[in-house]
Amino acid sequence: MRTRDINKEELVKEKTIEMIVKYGIEGFTMNKLAKECGISVATLYIYYADKEDLIKKIGTEMGTYFFKSSLKDFSPDMPFVEGLAKQWENRSEFMLKNTDKIACWEILQNSNYGEHIVNESLMELKEIMTKFLHRAIERKEIVPVSKEVFWSIAYGPLYNLLRFHEKGKGLGGTTPFQLTNEIQQEAFRLVIKALTP
Image (cartoon, rainbow, N blue to C red):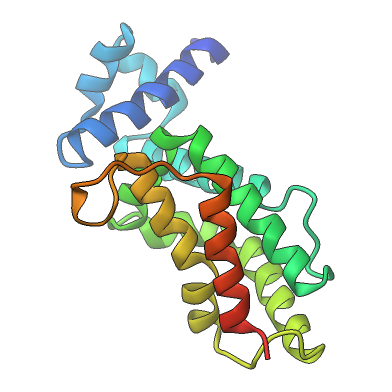
């Protein structure tokens, strides 16, 4: 039996992400992946049982990486404005540095694998963020809202600005756009205004 090679395993992960972004899940095959990596198909099966196993494991690993990055220097016990500011900082930093992973994550999250990947990688994040929300409501730092409304208001503006930045174009696609700290802070102030009493 052949042993695992960490370098090959990392190459497989990297190429999987690239290929899913380029071809989508339907256009992604183990044969194409092996060819892209310069390895035999049999080598892939040392690391993964099949295409589904590969996609689920890589998706879960990306979700876990995103989860850990978003919680850097964050605590659900932080005052609301400070905690949300830290979340915006962590999330924007991660998304700006990992555009390929984010593009792949979006594809996987909206696929048949999405529920499995989210449940495997983000349950703890959901619990921590729910705790953060409930504590902010209990301390009357924000108006009472459902998790879904909170999430939409608290993070929707940031994610939309990051999408504009990724495309390099503003609304309508006609004007150049680059996310600056000033723009991000302007949006953040409006989010705080919307959520606080």
